[in-house]
Length: 105
Image (tube, rainbow, N blue to C red; front, side, top):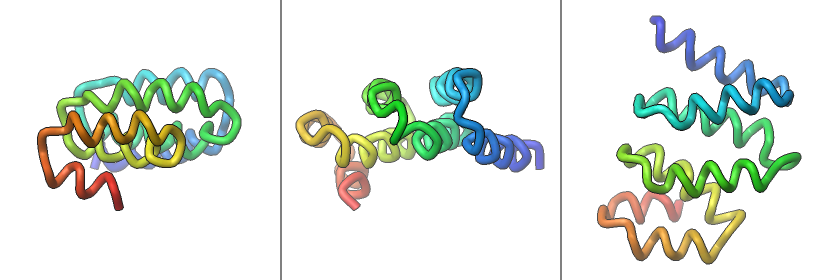
């Protein structure tokens, strides 16, 4: 129940595109706990992809190396639409074939 509340709070925070919210979501996306990291990135992407695309792109590039596959997939999907050359590099460097396949969906 606690994680559910945290996830909902991150979703709600994406509705407030302030600098404090962006900083918090970035910090959350960098943690090792994958479900929270992925949702933090998704919230940042939803809230700031149009107004601060470079900030989201920098974080996505970092998350392409995250130990959790679901986080890497989420970051790769963003990079596919924003930075095709980096996405192609990710596909070449990713060792898990299922991750490459999911990233292309």
